[in-house]
Length: 434
Picture (cartoon, rainbow, N blue to C red):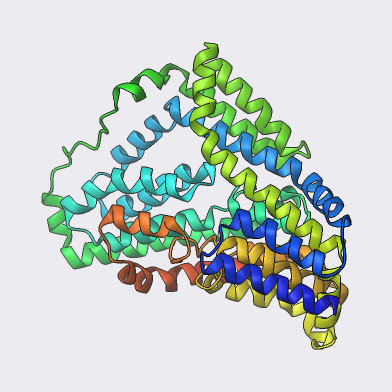
């Protein structure tokens, strides 16, 4: 009976989120509470909610400080010289242009925000693509591919996977670094391939005849000029390198790393107290939105675990799965993770589908973390920029003036290939078995 209530709770959650009848924040709180009351938990439901939120508090704090930190250094103009350098380097060579676009998207996606990545990359590179007559589907495709393989410990899918299974993001991310490197190499390789195709299509003589005096310089608003701190570029860059190095090379809590980095960024760039308040307020909306979702997810996972619904569903599922098949589940999840982005939004998948799969295989002796890592290799990472379930997809195509259907036909095979390559790389490096 408890397993049936759990299945109905998750099915109802998926229905209301995917049909957009409820926001994820509301659905993740209201529906599991109703499920817990039906299961007879009574006032213990409140205790389960608090337990779930308590487990996720450090993670929510990390995200708040991370998004604010990257927002502050962006305001200070740390990325401006990097963007100008990339644009000077690419000239009118299509191979360099496409790979340079991928590198720019890679850097812009350091804050883990897809919309910001697209807002920086597409307007910067679109005039060059238009002037040279290059295929804008390639501009959109390389941007999507670069952002997709650049999953970091503070990006949405990683945070959700960590929250759903209560596993530190550090433990999820570090073993996936070799697979991610393979994904980045694939991105560069696709940039070279697309560039050579464009050279052949338009003719090398055409590119040689085009002068390189086209100006890419973005006109800053008066407000942006006030916030820029070009003389502090190297100091801000050192801060970014230090915080990422701390995440990858040490066991220091990411929350502490970003907390210290944010305070240093504010004191260095904006010593005036009022300006510090303004910068925090400017990025508070994005940070608060994600933190709220995480706390709501904490309520959901706390209830599903505390009431025993998750365990009951997993035990029921074990009866339908051959024991010899369980060890292959993470690899299979990795292979299909990218197309799952077209079916499930990140909240539905990471808080509804993935925990059931993970706990089911765990009961059969397979670590739950393997399912989370396999999911990260595609579900709303390589898949988010083609999914109709994410607003960022529509932002991407509208900025470039590309039809959504054309973008999906062009990019889905490439993005899926990246996910499959990273899945094989993860299996070869021992993250999970074949």
